[in-house]
Image (cartoon, rainbow, N blue to C red; front, side, top):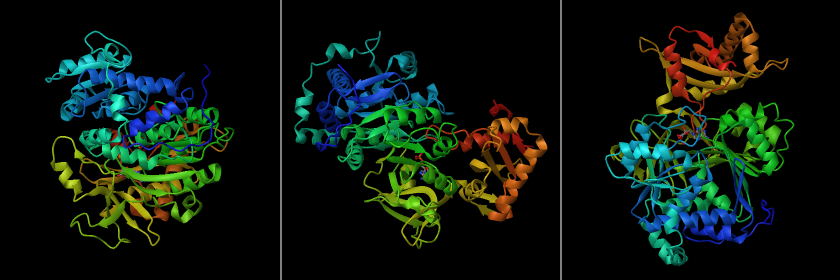
Length: 563
Ligand code: AMP
């Protein structure tokens, strides 16, 4: 049997109220087509279909149903991550991912304590793992006071429930083909619990029902194309429903466990990738990669990005290099997508400082964060949204929900305003506003000012309190390589301290003249790369902690980041 990626024309998607059944229908249309690539494996539609049905049969035989919550602990962005979720949802069970799915981040492996707490908080009765996580599963079970059944997707393991013995014993699939039966199942299902990155405090379990997840997939299914989608961000987050929609549309996915610019360039040209979703800083890394110019990226039709503020200056560069394929999305784990900046919008430089217009069905209002009153839209205030795919609430304690979700309106914690065209402009997050010498400084404004300097490739700005609790503006900056071809790191290593001081002074003056002396960072740290969180946002918590550990620094070259 030959395996191939489908290049067949688009076809009509068979609608079904349960997204997994719609996806299984799609897999049966072209069974020999490769639908999932991961590491050196290429899985056909037939193989993925068989894995989902076998796992669901086995789980059903062990009593899994709409009342059950399943923990999923698999290798980052592996096919097992998808198979476990599809099997659980087919039975109406809910899922919680108890691992970060990005190996490169500072949150790479959640601590055992955090995993135990997620399993307890969600009331998971069963943990589904792959071969790589068998030992961790035993450790988690030993630490939990409540019983936890274990299942290994890769085959039987001592002390684990045996899925294979029961496979095929259950005829649920035929029952579920009846849309009325699956609607009843969907209504009862807990759906998905996603843990937020915790960048604003303790990670919170965001609950979303299966019917909402169905809505998210349906909103993204596109019967007009068979996308070839590259995945580098955690499957447990924003990209999950997009992946389901791509497969349901007759497309395929290439799964990478993390973002690495060289690997992304290679995958796009080798697999003729048509769609991907990246964090904004990943776009800069692609643009700055030595292979960028020579790589054929002509297959790319949709480069979605978001997750943190994007630099207008760098977006202009990306549009020049890639054409009208960029689509910026703004959203939160709680609300999912809020607004979109379309490819034609990217051709209007004045719109690049915005995050575009609200998505269909999403309402955006600007409110006074203190009083909660609606503000005229051109006035800066807290962005509040109402969306058809809103979370139901957080796990555990009800108080945090009451404070962010009221009458269906979510307080995003983002500050922004709407312009005359209805485009939303974000200036920062409520808690991130820096009080510099009594003036309010929004980090995004300083980041954009730094990024408008020709030497700056990436920038992250954050407030750091000194021993007297006085807050200062700090910036971590990645420079473009030296004009003679040396990389930024080589330049920093070989260049005398005086020259580095001169660059830092120049950047500080650039911000002071572009914005105001209050905005000029007190400390500028030159780095080889910015540390990013699992979802690709600059890891400002880590940068702040590093700055606090070096209280006397004025500006500093990260010696450990220079290889
Ligand atoms: P999370 O819930 O971890 O996905 O983080 C959501 C937050 O990321 C939002 O509240 C924003 O602060 C930020 N964010 C997401 N997308 C964008 C974007 N396109 N531009 C600026 N900030 C963004």
